[in-house]
Length: 543
Ligand SMILES: *[C@@H]1O[C@H](CO)[C@@H](O)[C@H](O)[C@H]1NC(C)=O
Ligand SMILES: *[C@@H]1O[C@H](CO)[C@@H](O)[C@H](O)[C@H]1NC(C)=O
Ligand SMILES: *[C@@H]1O[C@H](CO)[C@@H](O)[C@H](O)[C@H]1NC(C)=O
Ligand SMILES: *[C@@H]1O[C@H](CO)[C@@H](O)[C@H](O)[C@H]1NC(C)=O
Image (cartoon, rainbow, N blue to C red; front, top):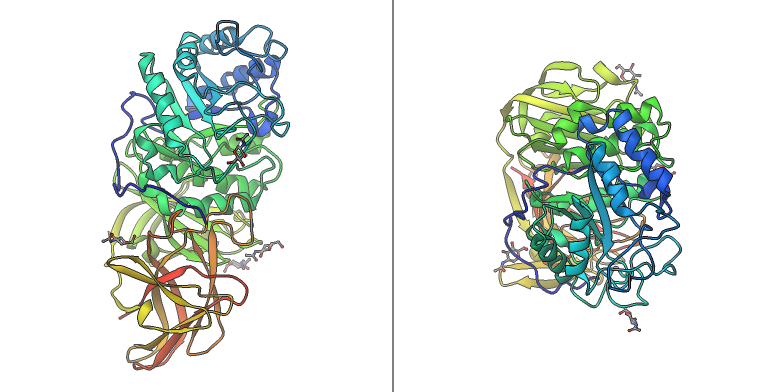
């Protein structure tokens, strides 16, 4: 369990006023394709290809360095400098090359004693900790338009990567942002501390234009990495706004490890979550499929929408699909439905899950008009053949007719029957929860009203889950609960993080449960035979 020292309770903070990054940054970064070993020729070719392929015209404007460009020593006057084997012509010349192509130039450094490297922390490239003013000035002199600022060796010269450091990381980022600001050159500042200490809630929007929310997506890319990152985004979508965005990490589109359908889902989700979109594949000979994903102007337009709001988590049908949605500046709604199933299937969006009874839809992947949808859209009508395992529906809804949110009768967890090791925990003066449910502990809500008919009911849970995972586990950044109505077969429910700490609620996780009887004699039991569930605040059952 991670300890967070001070949590700001401000829901939204003012964005950084450096005049850049009003919409998510787009461009190219070498890391997922070349790790920390990009050569000068590869840099030149990638920058040239961004232009030759017309990607710059679609918004992919930033050409960035990542790890591996630096020398292991500073100059005699203390200036940060490059590895002359990797970059014989030097960084300023590369900046000029990039600028001459009409692109913006991004550099990379690290808020630690040494920078990250790909040889397990033995290369010892110089870091910027303690050299912020000088390095910011150097970067500005080199014509930098962007700084990605990593987090290796942030604690000391032997602690390579630490996801639970004994120091606060926020000052490292604030110090560098102040130094960048003092140069007078607008430099987009990208904080890359892997989501450690919940930067969205510092809030990082006051010191950076974007902040990584999670550990690396790869390489190698994998579907499990996407699930881990998506679960970690759930509690912080509200922190995205013009000038400050959640960074879900570089794109893996074009790389091995993800199927075509997975790459499409990955791209559309990142775009709609307002993540920076950095292509991170070898552009020498990209496939038609890679380009068609990256060049989708409808999806890029969602990412670059001036409102800057992220899609938010709406509904999870465990092991089946996730429904996310968010507003665009023209009053429309973008919806992403992810198919978690491992096979091609007919996927149904229930419009009520995004708050509408009807709406007019456009498929943003294909551009086709789907017309007016009422009640539900059966994907089979339009694109059964195209929705593979882990594919997605990406829709823009206009003329949506809103429906009223359902009304619930609530049952506090602390009034339930606690079994095994389950126990009550005080969160603060107004909130108590039941914890240690699972691994033998159980929580049963009694006297639950099944209404006049019983049957299937929409149930809402308010819970706390602060179980952050840096690497992939069976349920990365989520916890499983088994839910049983009246002692019937238990249903598995995967509940994402509510925060990175154990004092912030997720409110209104919805699940449909069957087996209710008419009248007020129902029970609902939460358990998990082999792991802990979240901590529970209350359950609501639709009236
Ligand atoms: C560096 O930090 C790590 C993590 O806190 C600690 O275990 C280690 O002892 C420190 N090493 C030195 C040389 O201070
Ligand atoms: C998909 O397959 C993986 C690997 O076999 C498995 O772990 C996972 O549970 C499957 N997912 C679903 C939703 O069936
Ligand atoms: C999807 O629906 C269509 C039309 O109802 C049906 O023909 C097809 O078999 C379904 N596909 C799957 C994978 O269930
Ligand atoms: C108690 O915690 C809940 C959940 O995070 C929060 O909404 C509420 O504002 C807190 N109340 C107090 C008095 O701190």
